[in-house]
Structures are given as C-alpha cells and as structure tokens.
Length: 129
Picture 1 (cartoon, rainbow, N blue to C red):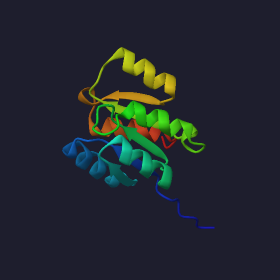
Picture 2: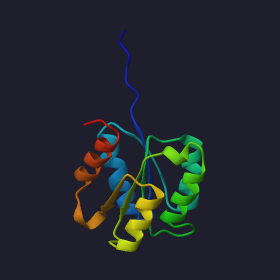
Picture 3: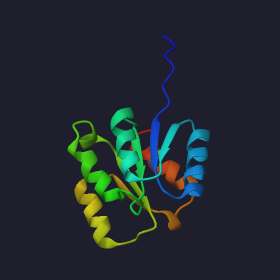
Picture 4: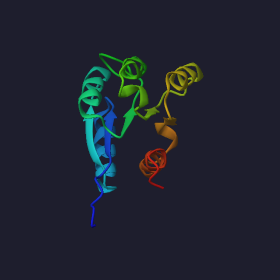
C-alpha cells in the first residue's frame, strides 16, 4: 500500500512577469505543480479546464481584472467551490470587501509579505500544515 501522493496544483494569475517567475519557482521548489496566466481571461480558461487545487489571483490585470474573473469563476459548478487567494498590491478596503463577498479564502498584499509567507498561506488553505 505504498500510495504516492499527487502534488497539489496551483494556478497563478498575474500580469507581472517577474512576480510570476518568482512565484512559479518558489511553488515548484515547494513541491507544487504550477501553471500561470497573464490576465483574467486566460486564467479563467485555464482554471475551468484544469481545475487546480488553488488559484492565486491578482486584481489589476489587462483584458479581464481579477474580480471579474472571480465572479465568472464562481458561476461555474466547479469554480463555485475553488479556493482563491487574492494576491495584489491594492490595499483598497472596498476591493477587499468585494473579494471577500464573492468568496476568496484569503487576501494578501504583495508588498507586505515574502514568497515563503505566500507558500505558507497556500499550504494552510489546502490543509497541508
């Protein structure tokens, strides 16, 4: 009975390339499968077709912003229950309230945390710690 646990999959939806590279590298080195999208439109397609274990979502992005993507995701049968962590530099209380109302599990301000803190938050949400 030697079952090997499948690594958790994370979708990073972020338009800042250097941030995406840093997050992808950090999560891969922490044992996650990672894929990414550079806007909400692409992120929504990837999320609905791949059903990641968790989604890290920026708010301010081209084509479709994070809150619009989140609203559309939550309309889907699978997406309604997908855990989403907002990862943004926007410390806007109105956006925070809106994100929480739509159904995010956590709201992280990028400038206030290290990459290791983000990994820890994701692991906590997924029940890995």
